[in-house]
Length: 156
Image 1 (spheres, rainbow, N blue to C red):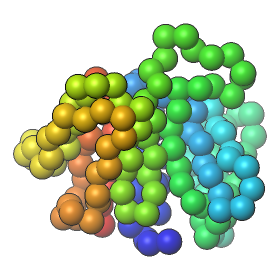
Image 2 (image 1 turned 180 degrees about the horizontal axis):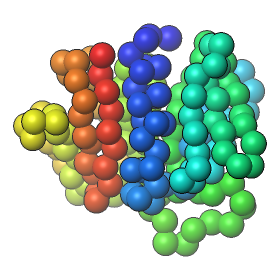
Image 3 (image 1 turned 30 degrees about the horizontal axis):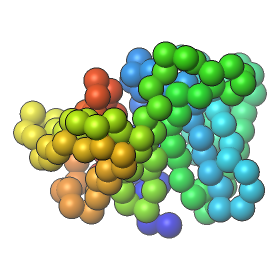
C-alpha cells in the first residue's frame, strides 16, 4: 500500500473531531483479512501509530490494526450500538489506494476541494459515488466540502 494512502488515512482519522461535527458517528477500518472494525467517534478518541499498528483508543479501550493489513478506512453515520440514527445522512467517505471515495451522494450533490490558501482546486456536481484522485493534487493540505460536510486531507 502506498505511503500516501497511509498519510491520508492517518490525517483523516486524526481530524475526527471535525468529522464528528459533520455528523459521522463511526470509523470503519477494513483489514484485508477479517471483518471490518467499527470504532465510535468521540471527543476522547485518540488515534496513534505503534510498532506498525494503527491504534484507536478511548475510555472504552483500544483496537489495533496492522498497517500492512489495512485495506481501507471509512466514516459512517451508523453507530456501533445497533440503534440507527433516523436523521443521519447515508453518505459514506472511504480513503483507499490514493483516492477519496464519496458514496451514496444524493442527486445534485456539490463536491468541492479547496487548498488552504482558499483556491478552489476541484468543483463538481455528483450523485451516487464520486472519486477524488489524490495523485492529481500537489503536496499540501486540502479541505473537501460536500453537502454541508467538511473533511481535511494531507497529500504528501
